[in-house]
Image (tube, rainbow, N blue to C red; front, side, top):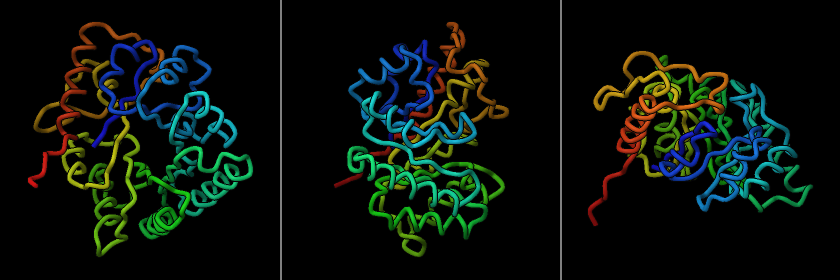
Length: 261
């Protein structure tokens, strides 16, 4: 499984090599340093709609403009937290915009699954599965919360239902949007071959407080909230040591073992 860490802008060049691909945010393209780094990268780049950061996705024209400037190959379609039906409607409107504006086919599209409950979530999933314009399906940890009280276990359950033959039998690639609970979740999710990737700022956020992940238990103490000024953060040497430790552990947890031929 590939990982991308959402990084403070001042440290993109310092920590960016740890990313297997790029996960960029549409609303940050006004920062020239941020825009230049991703635009000049030769890694596969996803442009997110910034719904998590802003509380609502940016508009279709805004995210397409951002993706174009960033030279992204993939766009995250808009979603509505906690509503499968609203997410389906927003995704369909986005695809229509791509078609009407001549951008359909220029980017791969990630459709995000949301739901007020498990049936609503499954209905949204099936729409994304059957829509020919959806290339990748995003599993938001917020969207999967109906599956279990523990947020990490909830997304594991959602992925299991989606990919098992007795469930939705999903064969499209899955992207894990964020890391809402214990990052040890990666050790389970990596065994699902269609789980392609995950983006997260968790190893950096924990490291800013000098909180190191444990090789066995994952989180030590609570998951910390991302600071409001996160993307402008400065990192001192002690924080950097904790961050690089956390990134290294998470990359090891996500690494798939070579299968015997």
